[in-house]
Length: 119
Image (cartoon, rainbow, N blue to C red; front, side, top):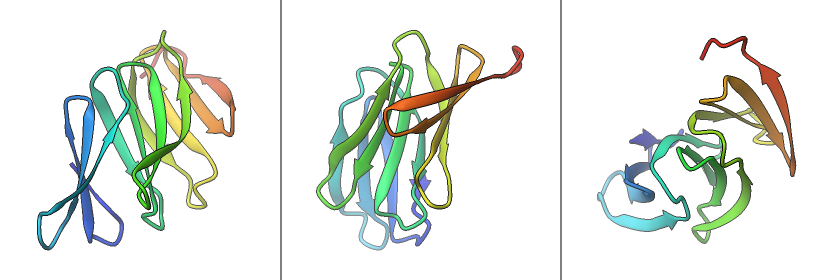
């Protein structure tokens, strides 16, 4: 479960589905589907307009909470992602996983940084 920065929303993972709720009413306001395996990490953008997710299916997805649609993706089937984060301006997404590399995802071209085996 991950609360939005404003605290008015929270996202909970149920297998490969992300469920978004209104905090004050606990109403399910939307579901995000697209991962093919377990979702391991969630990150809200600073303005709470988007949610970033990554999972063991090798996918990092960017979701718009305006219409609950996927607006960005980067998939690497050979990596099981364990954690993701985004910058304060939400232009870069960082993800790390089973291949001991940190990926900075900006647009369609990720940059890779070796972690020297320490994950």
